[in-house]
Length: 193
Image (tube, rainbow, N blue to C red):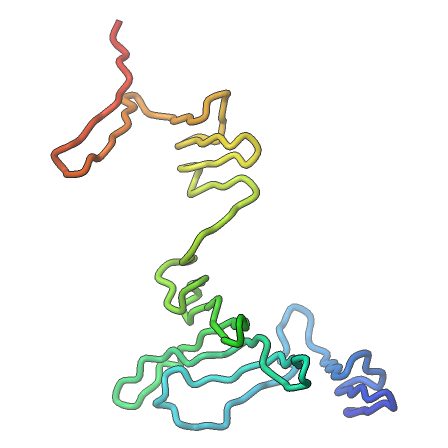
């Protein structure tokens, strides 16, 4: 059967034994992604940036009134020129706090991810504080923080008993920039004997 409704109220599409309120079963070919369902915005006004389609997660308050608790939105991010769309679509994740729905995370059409911003400028753009509970590396060990010892390494992850370890080259120096460009200090290693 293509469509099944059980006495429990569970609805099945492509299955005769739905396990949840809506159970969609669609068999695809191995190694391919198969579309199980489509959500479409019937508004054909393609000149509206921001137009999108959403999945809303509805909750009820103590008075029994329904409200959208959180949502996932497909957002048209196209820059319209002469009425022609670029088919640029991003994905926004919203949560509700104090009765205000706010977009918390955006995956832009170019794959950039923004947390606390809807216009990420980098692969990962975080606006706000962060907390990493494990080791943290930037690049090919350009910057390393050991989460257990709270020690920092620059150009090395081999941290000894020092709070800060810097792996230099044949002329290792550390530069400090003062309040103005003319106020510079440099700390270096004197290898002369």
